[in-house]
Image 1 (cartoon, helix red, strand yellow):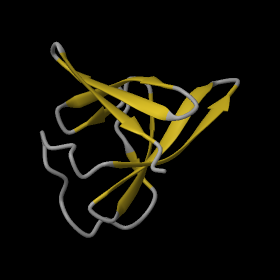
Image 2: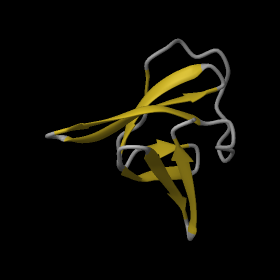
Image 3: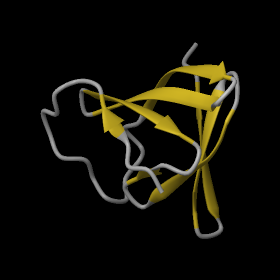
Length: 81
């Protein structure tokens, strides 16, 4: 699985299991697949399906949401507003 790519300089370390402070900034669909921009603790990262964020795996990305899974648990990040 691909690791996430930080787009901004990290200011704090990311928690391994807590995704409560993740914010979805936007999604983009390309011929190669979907990408999402997320912010956590001031860091902006670009993720795609299969990437990991702490203990969570990005399972799907659509026009307005990113789906994260860990075991049988699922978290959905939606666009603010």
